[in-house]
Image 1 (cartoon, rainbow, N blue to C red):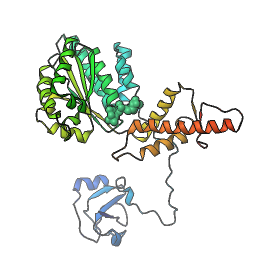
Image 2: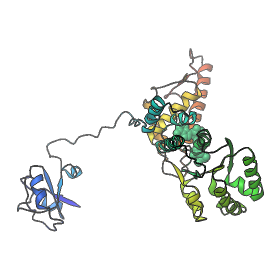
Image 3: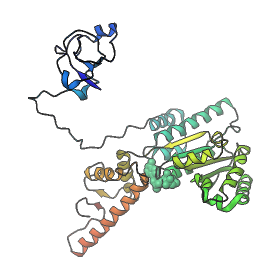
Length: 373
Ligand SMILES: Nc1ncnc2c1ncn2[C@@H]1O[C@H](COP(=O)(O)OP(=O)(O)OP(=O)(O)O)[C@@H](O)[C@H]1O
Ligand SMILES: [Mg+2]
């Protein structure tokens, strides 16, 4: 798409070149008359600045066409300034809402507190709050939620926090009273396929004896993978159980988006049994940096100092480098950050050992040096 500019730049005029794509409605011409305007034309290179005769090309404001603006020849081109700080993380709306609920409605949930301390995951945080609000309302209305389905599927790429959140979620469901018991069984799709239907039945019975709870099937797509012989049978068995056990046992599934689509295609009855979906997005560079700092802070109980300080150049470079893998299959999000920290600390250990051997004065064990490891 090309644009040409009328010579006087004010008021309607027509460029001499064709085609004219769309007439500007008469009412708009008046409104936009005083603005700088661009006119759509098929041959920008030929008609730049040559439009003369009045009338009716499609009108767009300079605001929209900024990237087509030709810089005046005598003015030097502006250099693009690279920001020397990461874009700051938007304040979590969910966290603000939770703080509000805690302050003014006396709401409490240690699981939500823990979730709010995790980096990013805004969608997941909001979903927890929605469930909490619904349960609180049901309590005030004095209605029974035991017939509602809370089957949940957690979808996301590696290292986005699915397993961590699933554990929190199961405790959360028990503490808000959605399920009667607080027993939690964690298994995987491949373990269930290997153990077969009989073992699965025993697991469910033992859970029921304990008053109910959550069965979390991590990497659930493994149940329908070609190399899983018993997986299909277990899944067919679970299909009926999930429905029959509503209100007593909640099933939580987790897996990668693409593989889980294949999983749900296995049986048309599956999606409706898992009406809740928690989506885990890949972390952006700022979030990766915050996870890096959070991880270092947690591991060394805030004693480790970082060259350039948290949020400084060193942390930004590390986060950007990790973030370069985003979009590729093996990109492991928060796990990639943890692996990077392992490498960093290995290099630090080598440097510290070298400096101690060389007798280079006092060596600080709690300093991550950008330049020397
Ligand atoms: N939002 C987060 N903030 C801080 N740490 C996180 C966050 N999400 C995940 N982590 C950390 O990343 C690591 C991997 O998380 P987890 O195992 O839950 O990911 P996953 O999505 O289950 O990965 P996979 O699909 O490969 O099993 C854990 O050590 C966890 O503590
Ligand atoms: Mg996992």
